[in-house]
Image (cartoon, rainbow, N blue to C red):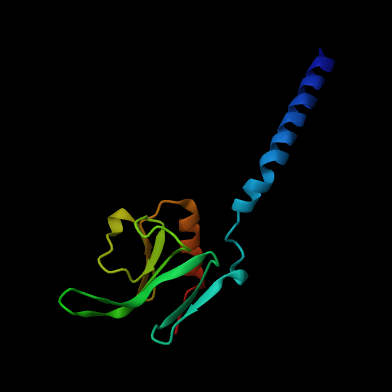
Length: 139
């Protein structure tokens, strides 16, 4: 009976090892994909009173002062980040000083008077949001 149990356990370990070898590299590539802040790009703009870091596979999609239809211009700079070539209609973006952001539909974090927000529920986007916040420096 012990020999049968031992054989079963060795077989189970072998199957689990094969599964780990088969999917391990793909999963490892995604886990921690954005962990190395040192390799991130730095946003810096002389008109902004802040700098921050963001992933190399993300881009600044918009960078301006929000203007209403009536011509009123915001006093804080708005910056939108998303994955390079990302869908502008998706919620997987991060915006700094987003005008008319509904906090009940998303997440906002404040650094000084700057608000860093997203509607995304994607864990990777939320992780990036937290890392942007941690790298945020007010001038």
